[in-house]
Image (cartoon, rainbow, N blue to C red; front, side, top):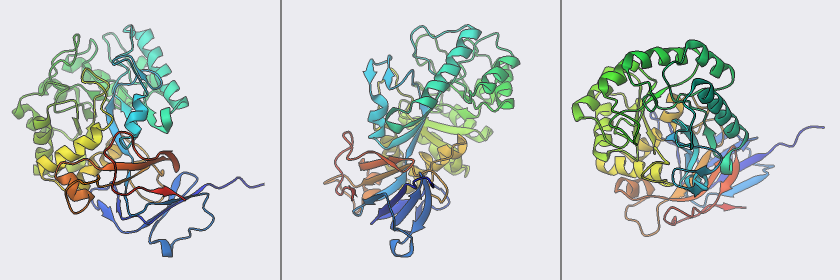
Length: 390
């Protein structure tokens, strides 16, 4: 007896945002997904739309890959002790975020700093978010913070157990560039991706990480290049963009002017594929359910960049820099999607023009692996048009 095939058909799409810088907008008014993966994109009349188990009438709304938050600090489940808040991940889903990347579970009360304890916590964090996806959101977690005394075998042990990320280098006792570089090298050897804290201290106990330390450590991602919260001087930010090929991460909880500087520098050196977006939440600033959408609107409007290009920073760029199998609308990719439209009464001839004027769009629906996870957003302004499950 054959297994049941789950077939999703989304029709009457106004425009498709691909998530790919080389072609941010693609043609088609229909997307088909089978068992959670995109199987066809194009005009509905030309596609096999029969036998759908779920049909969505997009009703003239736009569709984008689900947004990816490259920098979060989860702890356990959908709770953050940092702000004593439940369901913060679900709130971010209502802001269009379908994937999150941990930069360290640093807000866990009593976070162990001994090597045995930090390894155990990293493995446990990786496991519980692998086994439990809050509201369906894909949370990639288990990101240990480096501490003095770690050896190569520790990284091999963690990799063998499934750990694939390092927390922000510099949040623990390892702050010297030489030591950080050695440990980042061990992590890279065993397939563990690294992020480094950039800028002034974020909370008591953290410290300044300047450009020289960042360059010497050579982590895979220049975490919050615009500071978390305090940014480095402008010349150090431009130097970091120009002197390496690592990910340029711009976050909501940083210096907005410095974020614009980093983005403009990436355009000047023709390396916009390195720009990725995060929130750096939960943090002292709180939780920002609309943080990624706000970053898109801010960078597009104040940076004078087409909104469809900035969407790529929060989708395909992040997926590529983070080695994720999502973030673009392409045959074979997971159907992690958001349907959105221009907010009611917002200026602009269409959604993209409205965003370029600094306005947030309204999210009408999110899907993860082809499954509807939320409908009309409780957090964005109401969209002009809404998709409907038929």
